[in-house]
Image (cartoon, rainbow, N blue to C red; front, side, top):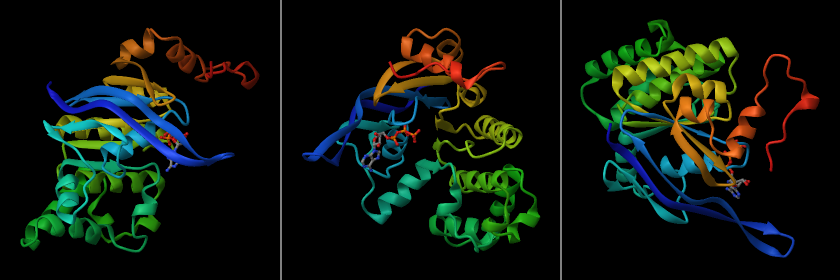
Length: 271
Ligand SMILES: Nc1ncnc2c1ncn2[C@@H]1O[C@H](COP(=O)(O)OP(=O)(O)OP(=O)(O)O)[C@@H](O)[C@H]1O
């Protein structure tokens, strides 16, 4: 597997209001890592460690303060013009925890998918209709869902539809931000299986942001641990989660509830 994404010395600082006027809040600091082509990289860390900020920068939703992101050998800057946004959408897609915010609640699923395809590949209507059928089938939704609207879907079905939208343009990377966190465990497992199957079938890479280490074990071959916007350790998921080298990763693992776990005994992650 060769490098698809190269992140070098990435820094993101926000200006926030403090007691003495504007202060700098550093969300990412000197972050460097590679994501191999076809790989699924987990980004884990507790709340506020900078996971979503990283995901949004890679998806082109916000600019970095400094540092660089290279995708397939080309520098990745936030797309400013419509033509750049269209080009980026074909390369990198994002799936959020609750896709409802980005969906038109009353637009039928078939029409929504056709709209995306039409924007990128105008012309052949018959091809678009066949492609919509194929996409629904790929995410395990029957043809009947063509006429359904997002507001009539369950959480799991909604996430399947969000995945169908994400794969519609055959991107090479999908950034998934807590994409199964709002689902029941059994539905979670189905969506995670779907993601694994799609990765195998389509050769897509994932940047998989999650606070849930059990979920990460199921879908990610690589794991990057972050704390306070910095990289703590990175390596094969099995190694990082079964034999962590860094005290922070150990404390993160120790904080995962297990059978017999009692809230009063919970390990503090902050050191
Ligand atoms: N737009 C913003 N303006 C100011 N501060 C921000 C902004 N976005 C994020 N931050 C801050 O940057 C830090 C990292 O936030 P981020 O959402 O990336 O963390 P996270 O690891 O994804 O957390 P969570 O798991 O809770 O979503 C936090 O301190 C957050 O308050």
